[in-house]
Image 1: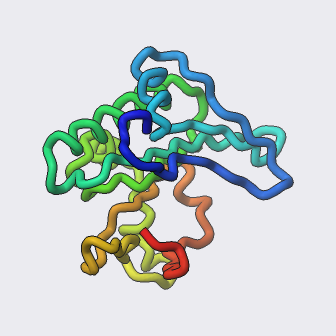
Image 2: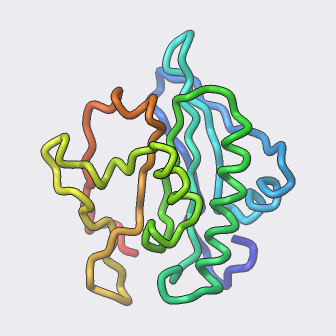
Amino acid sequence: DNQADHHLAGVATITDSGRALGEVKPTTEKFKRAKQTGRTSITVAAVNHSMQIAAANVYGYTGGNGSAKQLKKTNTVVDATLEEFNCLEGKFKIFAGDLNADIDHINGCKELLRKGWVDVGAVAHLWGEEDCEHTCVTANSKKPTRRDFMLVSPELFPMIKSFKVVHDNDVPT
């Protein structure tokens, strides 16, 4: 983030070594501006010769639940990312990120859910895990929260074989 007064993690997408992975070059002006913040990316991974999965990744602005200004900035990045995402062909899509806010405060996520997308963490019981398990405990607030989300298109959802939130206390936040 070129406006932050300290270093931030940014976004990245990785895949196993057997998959081709390419970053989507911005075509919309909104996404070009959002991408310059370092808080969003869209990549496409080839699953096989006839199937690709597009993945959008967003890092929301800190304090989105407590600050209307921060939430507005996060919503702007999410909206720009989804506008670009909608320009891509294909039905197999993932929208993921550390949104730094509750999902019901993120307009673009609410719209995806209305369109039949699935919040995978909200249905983790399908893989024997806890629904809506916390994903974040910060130094400033020891109360666990859920700020990280993965939404998948309805066409991709049946292909998910497992899901788990991994708590790694060796990575401080």
